[in-house]
Image (cartoon, rainbow, N blue to C red):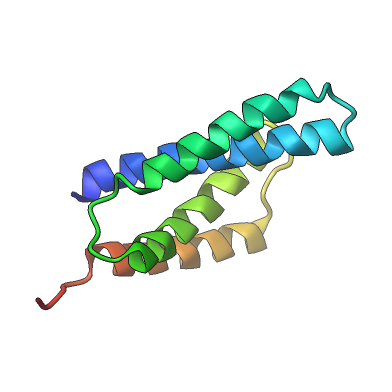
Length: 110
């Protein structure tokens, strides 16, 4: 589960960030409104992907995803927007990644 779950979380994060960025590009960067159409499609795919995670509780899946989302957001900022994360970004993302790992990999009782 951890490998497949991590892949799904990363794919979901890229869809969510891409979908939100499409609206950002339309409303803040003056791109065509057609960007929003693609954004809606990515956001639908994001929501569907999160339902594919093997978790008995949606809240736990969403909580674990939150840390992955933060990591992916900083990666997006660096790769797509050209903004390099600073040390505080990196410290924060490390804390979030550890938190997600605890939620994802912690032992569960039945």
